[in-house]
Amino acid sequence: MTQTQFTPRVFSGIQPSGGLTLGNYLGAMKRFVDMQGPEFETIYCMVDLHAITVWQDPAALSHNTRELCAGYIAAGIDPEQSILFNQSQVPEHAQLAWIFNCVARMGWMQRMTQWKDKAGKNTQNASLGLFAYPALMAADILIYHATHVPVGEDQKQHLELTRDIAIKFNNDFGVDFFPVTEPVIEGAATRVMSLRDGSKKMSKSDPSDMSRINMTDDADTIAKKIRKAKTDPDALPSEVDGLEDRPEARNLVNIYAALSDSSAAQVLADVGGKQFGEFKPMLAELAVEKLSPISSEMARLMGEQSEIDQILARGAEKARAIAAPILKQTYEIVGMVGAASR
Ligand code: ATP
Ligand code: MG
Image (tube, rainbow, N blue to C red; front, side, top):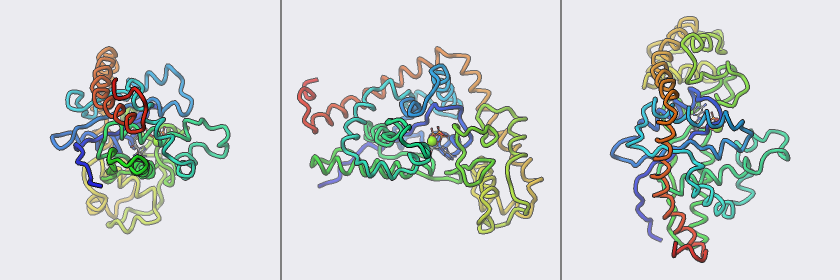
């Protein structure tokens, strides 16, 4: 079978499941901004259907969706250049997800570590949506025939599943219809860890606010959280090898590297030998310098709700123009009567 040439197209999403964190910014959003340009068509989404796989207060969900949109724009996503919208407003995502529910196998889904982490011990009480989450994520990507997906390291397994779903669909129906997507997991901060526990990912849904830096935190709060971040008593090493078995130290160095667009090796060449008492204030100052222009722009945009809603509505229209023909072709391939004439 010949490999079809697909338009270079980027898709990624963030859940409006709480306030944006530094992990979301460094691992995802900042990198989404970097991928805007002539090389790719870029499509970025607020994945509200994913957010409701765990309970969301309706008013909070609306607020968080708009705040996430404000975050995207404040971080540098240009709604003229990229397609920016919320997932529920493009029904083709959920429609393709159903097809993929019938392609993916139970065994594949049961292996997903996010499912195991989020469902916890009481899997019987988790929502069916939480279990099916990766099939919806595959649909989010493949409904646009996206070729590149920038994500944090925690999403690697879901992207492998997306590739498996595309391959199985193509095999089952003898077509070369869905691209086998490339994950793009790059940079110094693909996995920002909790400030309280270097073995846990920083998450917007973590119960402890001290575990994360929120994009809406003010300068004093950011400085306090970094000052109180868990560390070890040793000085910083001069080389990356010296960070082995020091997850908290590694995390702060990686954050510094990503915020300053450099690498852990470069940062350590400068700060090796310093104690945390000296390094933490440097990190806090850098974080405030980079984040405060974004958070003030977010606050300004949140005062312009109708502008945000218009941007989302226009984005959904543009997204549907790509998604609808791909869903139609999928239905035709699967053999659904009526699909061809619509
Ligand atoms: P939740 O806890 O509700 O799952 P989250 O903070 O994990 O929220 P998501 O919306 O699930 O955020 O993820 C959005 C994007 O941010 C994904 O690409 C994910 O890989 C990335 N991301 C999330 N947390 C981190 C992190 N700590 N470090 C780097 N990237 C991250
Ligand atoms: Mg997550």
